[in-house]
Amino acid sequence: MDGATYRAVRDRTEALAAPLGPEDQVVQSMPDASPTKWHRAHTTWFFDEFVLGGTTRPDYRYLFNSYYEAVGPRQPRNARGLITRPTVDEVATYRAEVDDAMAAVLTDDPSPLVELGLHHEQQHQELLLMDAKHLLHQNPLRPAYSAAPHTPTPVDVLGWGWVEHPGGIVPIGHDGRGFTYDNELPRHDVLLQPFALADRAVTAGEWRSFMADGGYERSELWLSDGWYAVQQHGWDSPLYWEPSADRGAGEWDLFTLGGLRPVDPSEPVVHVSYYEADAYARWAGHRLPTEQEWEAIAHPLASEFADCEGTFVDDHLAEGTVVHPRPAGAHRHGGPPRQLFGDVWEWTGSAYLPYPGFAPAPGAVGEYNGKFMSGQHVLRGGCCATPAGHLRTTYRNFFPPSARWAFSGVRLATS
Image 1 (cartoon, rainbow, N blue to C red):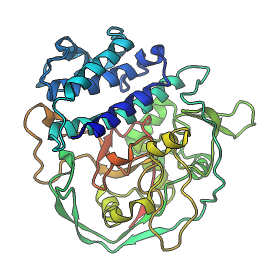
Image 2: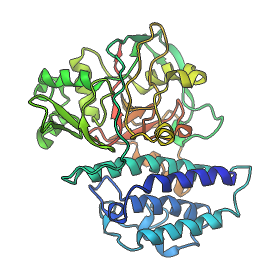
Image 3: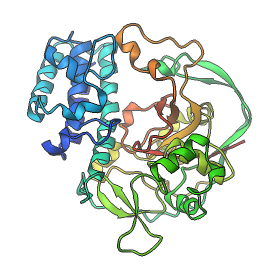
């Protein structure tokens, strides 16, 4: 991997962390989230451990190992916020030390471990924003990560339609050309019945209609575990929504990385769990797509990626705008689906399971994906916090069905 690519990814992490002060970077808001400082150190430890042999700072191995049993014991995940030392400045020094050592091993012929490390860091760039947003939301003052103003997009996205697929035998999974995670392999054939995929994601305005119709109060719409989560956590709206304090009854505000502002009904609804997505689909008279259906629609469009993509973190950074999903744009009769890539990760109805013939990579890096193939659901398509070059049509993201802090939304399917 050439030095310019390595440097660009590493610099992006620092740019995303820059708006956060030292106090912001140490606190852990919940067991599933990690402090910004930990993300910066862990992504550095990955190169140190797996490429450099763990020679830079051996004493950091316990602190910044995430879940690699083959490497050894580690700080418990729910106690990462207790690691006040090394300091934020010392983590910056660690990053610089590892970057200097990595310069000697970078070549134009990419090492698989270096390439894996860079994609791993891009994953953590998205996690950094997710976790920082969750942390800042705990503050009663609702402070903004970014001072960029929100400018509502004057787009009518009420129109929508279906992108039909005839079904049949279709290939699923990565074809082996270019980088891939092991969970995208092996490529295999599946039989699909005829189906159709909505040509855009569900909007916040449509979600308000679901709420107004008692969506969070009607047990018949929910899976049993989902209904239990609604009652246990008191869900009555997506995460980060709250009743407006100054705009009257029935109005909602939304906490974003730019602070608190009114819900924009044209934007995709975001920060909903699989349980909520499934309940909404049932309320709407449709269902969630399977991950194979989603990929069958997406794969032929790979060459037209730009024509059906939304926004990625690259767009927001280039424009100086708040990282948040944008409206889909006007409906295009007979056109490709809108925002199939970017804006919001789209829940599928598929459990996260191995493909037929799956085998994890040997050694510690084989723990990267396979060990999590239980109790999770697959999401597809990337989001507004995803680096554009990190995504593929075969990319399989996964979260527990109750998770809401990811930039996750909904696209409907019908049989």
